[in-house]
Image (cartoon, rainbow, N blue to C red; front, side, top):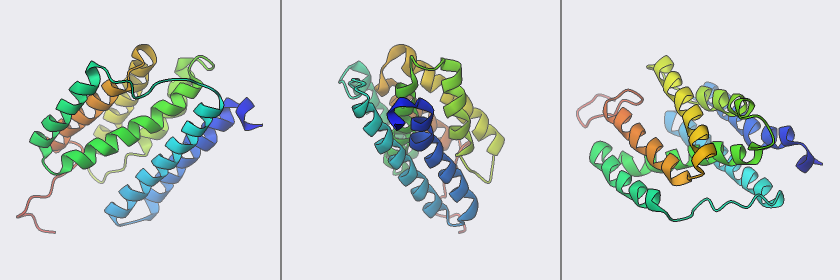
Length: 189
C-alpha cells in the first residue's frame, strides 16, 4: 500500500507534479498559461500531500495564529508598496510554492534524513523556476531559499515565517527586476 512507502508518497505527491510542471514549462509558449498551469500542478501536489498527512495522522496545526501571522499580514502591505498590483498575486504564489514544499517535507521529517529530504525536494523546486533571463541567478536564489525554507520549517515549525520571508524577499527581488521584469505602461509589447 502507498501509505507504507514514503518514497511513493513523495513521488506521487511532489515529484510527479513537479516533473509535469517542469515539462509543461518547456512545451508551452504563452507565459500566463505556463504560470497558471504550474500553480495548478502545485495545488494538486498540496491536495495530495494534505491527503497523506491526514491519512498518516500527522497532526500539525499549520495555520496556528502567532506573531508571525501578523508580521506576514504587514509584509503583504510592504509587498504592495514595492510591487503594487502584483503583490497579491505574488503573495498567493509564494504561499502555494511554500505549501507544496513544506507539506511533503512534513511527511518525510523524522523518517528520512534531512539531507535526503532536501535532495528530494529542492532540486525540483529550483528547476521548476523558468525564466528567459537571469536563469542561473534565479536557480541559485531558489536553490538557496528551498534549503533555507525547509530547514526553517524543520527547526521552527512556523509556516507563517516561511510565507512572510518568501513573499517579502521575492517582492524585493521583483522590484529590483532580478527575478521578473515588470512591464511598465510605456514598454512595448
